[in-house]
Length: 131
Image (cartoon, rainbow, N blue to C red; front, side):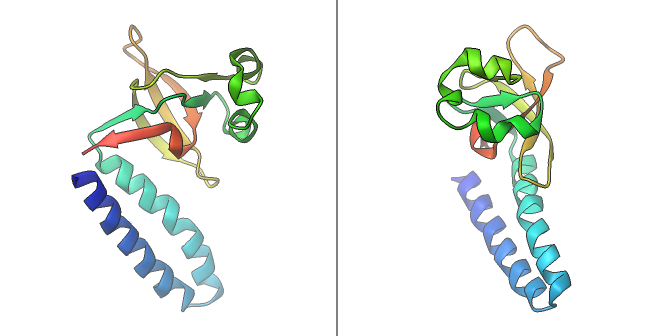
């Protein structure tokens, strides 16, 4: 409930900023493109517990995410491995490190037995959080 309230407030803030920046002109369009990424990253940072969703695909490089998340690549661990990616189990703890310009999330992935975690990239749909 609290997470959905934060999302609603975040989206209201986003809409207000887009309206405000697009009125400025060309500079406004640049700002409007950056605002959604900032809003998403602020929302995720507000969550106390971020986890992988079911069948989350994580990659060593953000460039591989587009192809890795499409069929038939997304259905084969072998194909994913050759791309430097893998399909994670659900519920593994992660920490958001940054969001790049294409919207990919860099996270520190904490599977059982690896206390320091490992850095991977994933699409925002690969994660969920609790307030």
